[in-house]
Image (tube, rainbow, N blue to C red; front, side, top):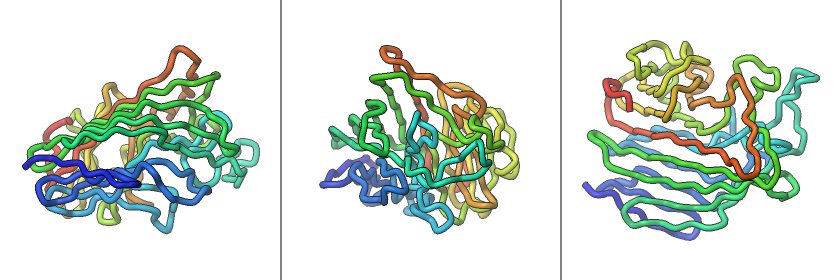
Length: 275
């Protein structure tokens, strides 16, 4: 089966044969409080099984699969409230920024190249991102290679609630909010470790896969280098590499910063490969 990309005014549909397996929404209409940003949703396996969630009742700012950053200088580009070190609580600071697509090119075979502006709550530019998404067919499923190169007009600090004082909350970067059926998922790392997904919070690996408890579908994320991971399963199902789990990243003008990952979506329980 061949992958096909079809663009409309707000998004790009990715189809594998007759099945739409993903939609990349580059012009979102989500609320300001959710830090609007491009996202992928819906997302399904090749057989049409949904694997992602969008604006769930527990965290409405979780938008399928997206790049989201809770601490980007003076802005919250994750959504929801911001962690305050002084009070030890999440507060509504009015600091929700946004990521706005400024240009986009779409290849009919499934390659997307775009420029994304990172803006603070006042609409001031924090960074410019060159984003490339490449979809491909995979045995029993499909893959997405994501690359983001970030350039800044002035120094920008990227971090997480964990680097701001909240233990175990190192989220930020690429995050996949899994479908409700992944609650209680099994996680498998590239080195063969496997067990309840919640046990992998803060663990380090090059890739991590979540498999539904019934074994019906698997979602894997792989990074270029070994990374810490943010994982939830029982509270809600979701995961992603956590580059800001223990340290902040300082991005300076002229240096830039790059983020790369591969998403693999498979029918069935296939955790034998590391991605």
